[in-house]
Image 1 (cartoon, helix red, strand yellow):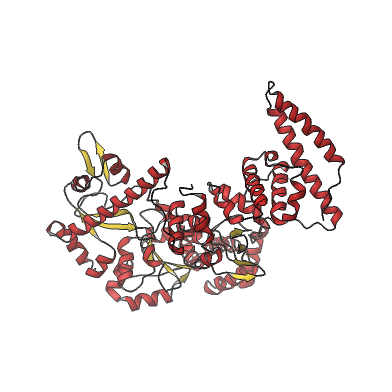
Image 2 (image 1 turned 180 degrees about the vertical axis):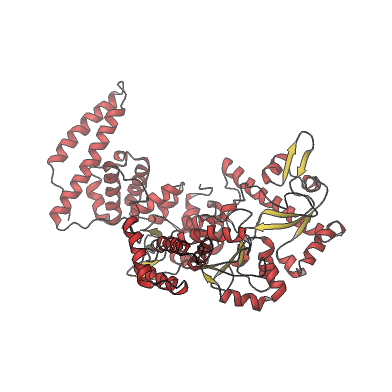
Length: 592
């Protein structure tokens, strides 16, 4: 991960206060010496996301997300480490050297940069083609869709030529090799045709990430070819599940909700009509990854899918996905028109805003669609509908919310409130009414499998050293970093012991010294674990001694099991350690 010197990484980190940075993304409230807010990485109603100015770290006691300011940007913005480093350096006014990338890291970084360059070049080329005689058909298509020049420019709309190797030849003329062009997803190769374009004779829609960089394309065929719409394949820079079309614009909208559409043209038509909060998935079904992405920017999503059967099915699939991450959803009724584009062309932006204001609660939408499967004039059909509705109502975890929906459904479908409530409770008793998720006291619970006792002991000892720095002079007499058999804890101990020797514990810096995201979480957990309070000096001394003994004994047993028969020096050290271990059992450890 560190493509830069440790000193430079530390300078960039220390010049970016973590509270200031995270406050730009999460609303934080100070409680004592720590700031708290709602975690941006999982659904929660009570803030368990903490940011410590003293430690320069964040940690969520609910889901276990944690790290320093670099980790946050990498998690939240989907940055690579160099991108996070560059963003924070720019923020602090620090110029980064360009020559410090190491071999493999430089190759990977260069490849990513070159792929972005290729996509940018392709976007510019398509953009130019649309505006000369070769792009006349596509330009006519966009004009018939009533798009203004300003809108076409904003979205970078273009055209891919009817010659199937046009872009390939253009990019080759720019000096790009076949290997990198193949990885771009824009060019394919076979023995018969050689290099050929993936997109040809199509109206082109550049797909941009949230930083306005072109990462892929969508293309609509001009004429009767198949498929009608084609999207870029996934590449090193293009992940369909982690991007949404026009989110780069929509995330800056002042509107407090997002409009979720099915197609690119719907999004563009809405933006042109003033609804700059519209987005769409990239030619794939809506996923939990998309929902988590939306949750970073809004709390409410309005579904504005097609009003046909396929659109209704898509809405029914999206609603539970949105709810799962904690987003509330409403459904916009566009009948008698098929989609937002048609609706706005026919009735205008003001009428569409009225439909937004009248949008249907997502649960009531689900019940309305469910009711269409039953003959409500037939007593048997009506009863079956009531039972299915009761099953769905029983899934609400909160009693007050459940009762409110029972009341709304009973009133709307003319069912007796008490009868429906009893039926809901009956189903709840059978399957157990859905319960509110228990708020986790520590990220180590439920997020990871139960740790074995020895790993817990090593973790506990490190957390003690971090929380009570006065214990270091006692612990170092008996425990060295070599006594930690878990590799990540051994490395953490080495860094901690070195920092203690220098007289400067620096949690935020320690996180930067671990490359793997899971390792960073683990280290963040060390610095934020809530140690069970032990009453009384004697009890604390006893607990500390037992922990030291467990770690030391495990270290001895581990080395004894792995020592070579010919290792005379190692065997002698084991004998010495055995004596020390026995002496430690009889020793009283005193905490001042």
